[in-house]
Image (cartoon, rainbow over all chains, first blue to last red; front, top):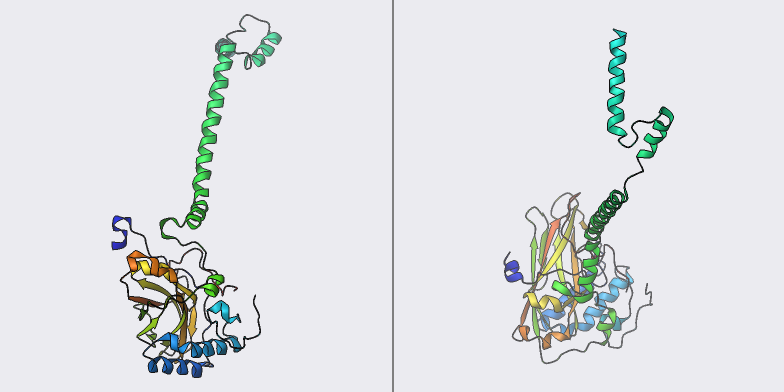
Length: 89
Length: 245
């Protein structure tokens, strides 16, 4: 392993903070996903322009029990948007 | 005949008496018996001291051996606690708390390109690809990206994934809030799903001199088939279920 030459540090994958997304088997949030993807294509892959669509997608996930409901500020969205019912565990 | 047997018996007894009762020869039978019993505990003082020293040395050595064995067993969890507390050897401390996301500020003058790569293990039968080849992200801002996986077979397949970040130094600043890795994901036959990755780049990346000229970070996910009894090398602190906020 080249990473072990000169005792360099190894890459250690870290688990995500909030765990794993449950799979969207029924495609409940497919529409929001397509809106987000088309927004990215329009804006030359610049995510700063598409934060609202990203927020819509995550809201859809929260509404359909595919994601834990958390406040938007904890997810890095500081814009005005009605927060979903807080159900922090 | 009997006389010779008795004679032999007598001789044996005398021999035994002489070897085991050196201090008690020439005494009457009852006294001889008592003497024989007492003989075991009457050593000369020097002899007793030597025996005591020998015994305590033996106890010390045994205790030392047990202590070393115990330390070697205890070293495993102690070492991992030490590593996590002091971030020694590349382990990251568990400091990715939600408060950081709340208070971090977007860095406007630096834009990083994140490239996405999707791989599958050699025996994995899914079709797995990223939905976007690359996206532009500013450090300090959360971003969403998608991968698509499709199961073209007629059987439900369970997959499990891990990821890698290149360049290596940038991996320390790449924080995932939520994704689909490290947990078994089942895809039903002929099913296609979108898998999101919600992440952010730590704004402290701008202060790292090794990454000053780094514009592109590649995130690579690899899916393996999860078989019964398959054990991938996960970090010991990987949580199996969704973590609380």
